[in-house]
Length: 92
Image: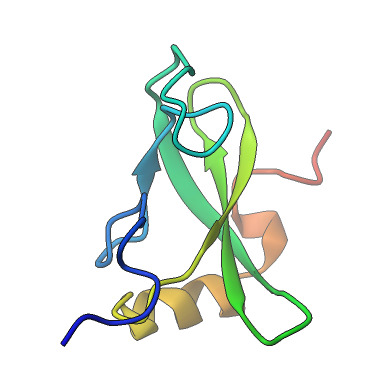
């Protein structure tokens, strides 16, 4: 049985990292190719969890839906980590 949200996943279900390959979802137009590190999680109005990624190469931020088989421990670790520990998002 396939878990919800896995058909178009763009991140690893274990570590939740991704690659910076898109400008717009699916276009493969970003030339960067850097590692997109999961730095935070937010929740949309309907209760859907979304992973916030930041490119370690160029600093681009992106939001990606969580999938049904994403590592729950990795998600909780991101949720519990202080935002200041995620690489200086607030450090200017």
